[in-house]
Amino acid sequence: MSPKRKRSKEQGDTNVRARPPTQRVRHHTTPHSVHRMPMAEQLAKLAPEGALGYRLVLPTRTPDDMPRLSPPLDATGYQGHYSLRPFQAPYDIRLMEGQTYRVVWTGASGEIVPPKANGTIPGLHFFLTSSDSSVQTEAESTSGDSASTAQTEPLQTASRASANKTEVDAQCNVTPIELTEIPKLARDLGPLVKELDAACREFAAWHRSDRGQSKSSPRDVLDPKQIAHYLTLTERLTEALRGRPLQMFVIEILCTGRLMHWMHAILVFLCQNERPTDALTLYEKLLSTLGEKPTELIIPRIELLLCARQFQDARLLAEQMLAVSPLDLNLLTAAATASQECGDYNSAESYLRRQYQTALDSFRIDLFVDTVEQLIAVLGKLGKEEECGRLNQMFGDNGFLAHGRRLMAEATPEPESSTSEPLPSSPPAVVAPPPSRNQPCPCKSGKRYRHCCRPKGPQSAVSSAGSTK
Image 1 (spheres, rainbow, N blue to C red):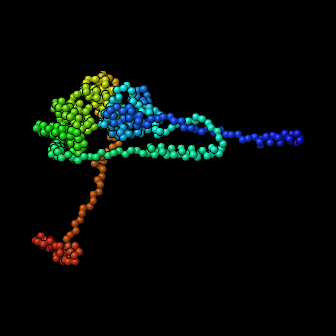
Image 2 (cartoon, one colour; image 1 turned 90 degrees about the vertical axis):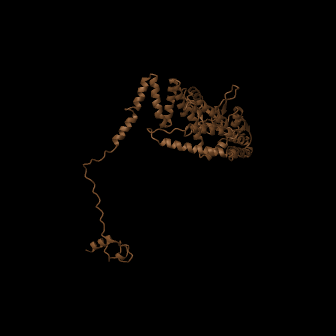
Image 3 (spheres, rainbow, N blue to C red; image 1 turned 60 degrees about the vertical axis):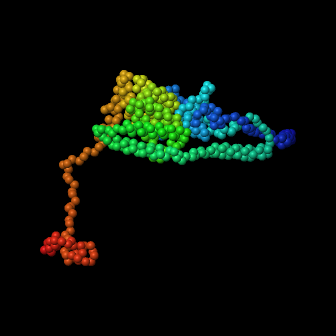
């Protein structure tokens, strides 16, 4: 290498070694809070007076799809609700982070409570993280040497771990539900409860005997004086429970669960005997005394309206309740029945179609068969012979049920013919002869037969004589 090139190479190496190290630019995330109002606070500001629970309306998947509610229906088809006090966060896995869902308010017994009359539609912004958490955004970049960065990173990691632990603890810290204390039976209710228990037992015995009778035999009818006595007891009970509805729970237990069934039978009896006004008046007294939920357990209002032949009111009530629970089979049945009684067969057809599909999806075989029969009758009245014929073909002599029964009959083994050889019978039992009088006794007592177990009398003498011969 020439001296000139060697000097230039040495100068270049010197410049490289003398060049100061470049500072690396590291991007750090700084907390930039995006305020999220806690879900409990959101609902508390929007809840109207009388609202104790809430449901969320899920968006429809197709334009023709029916709205779905959260929480979902349980195994019995009951539409529950989330509690407001104490607050119960929605746990439905169908809810998505960051979405806003419409809120439907419910009362103590699940009835619909209208929103506030300020023109706003209540909505809940749903999120999975804690309400006081912040969203980290890359807002600025800072520079520093590696030593300061190495000292800062463990502190940031520790702070993030502490924040995560605080968040987990906050989520796990669920306020326990306070247990309501059951009061003792009031002393002034003792004689009345004794009369009620006797009346419930008397009615239960009559009900069992009435169910045990055949259809051809004449049915026993309750004495009108007995019914009047039952009504008097019910009115005394509603007056005695005013201001202390929890006593009803104690009385129901003391009457071994018969009281509500007994009161249900009284209301139905009044409706069936052309006294619907008395039944509705008694129902309103129970409602004002016990509250909506216990009264609905005695008999649902819509069932009482149908029994009292108040079909227009029952239809309007069913439409209001179906707006919240569109897949409730009991409501669909009531709405279809009321529409048929009102002569609105188009609405009845719509309800029965929904009932048909819902009963099929939920495997409610008991309601499915009855729904098919009603739907065939309604389609016939509307003149839809083609669809009526299709249902008849599906469930008639050439339908799937008849086909399945034929296959079962074909698979049944035929009984064996009488010409086949009979099975060999077992040989007849051989009776051992009695021992002679001087032989050892079979009981193994060591004595002779005549001194031990040999029967005494003239017959034994004859039999022993025959045996010795």
